[in-house]
View 1 (cartoon, helix red, strand yellow):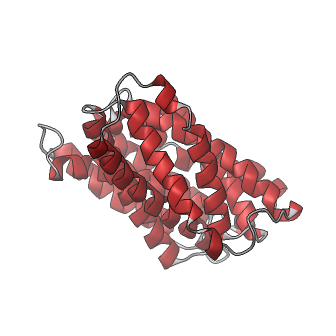
View 2 (cartoon, one colour):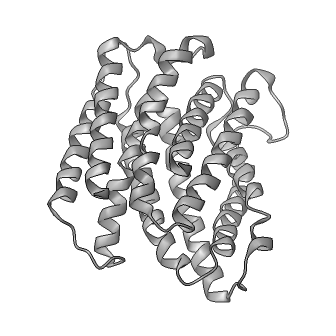
Length: 287
């Protein structure tokens, strides 16, 4: 249930953020605001921890935080370059990378079986369907690449978190991870498109609105993966964010003023079919 809610919140954040980017909120500026808000959400976590945090796990948590920061940056760049209903479903390929990384790094006693390889094949077909451009839709091969690498980065992160939370208190580890994300985000402030405190009502309202569900989905997914230690299963429900984003664009895109509402019905249908194929692949990995 936590992962299902997280998928809906992520899709909401992506659609709202896309509108802010179209109106000039700035890619780095939006990334900084989103990351700082997420970091604030995890500040109380050490108070709930039952174990002390060792130096070694501060180091491991910092590495995971850096991985999250880089992956999140890739996703924001992808969102800036392409449609929310295209890039968000592509991020649904993350569970395939989770399964592969778990096997490659021997984080599970189980090896890759036929269903996992079938899921990988479905993921490639799904990405082709989702990324197939239409005449009136915006398309960027660079954006597509950023989205895939972002999904791979988050896949590696999700595969490592359960392994480390088995050896450390999840509250402390997640605090360090997202604290590191916030710290690296502070270093980006001088490079932001405009001052962080400079408020532009036209675009910034969407930027800040998108930060709230982004923080909520981070909490939900961190609890689902870090506490219940079922990264592959949680990602089955989380992968539904692709479908959520397409439905949101179809239902609210015109009201929000999104450019991607100009995409043809055939393009949106292909994206929906691709998202469903990714869900099928994710399910094959979990069974």
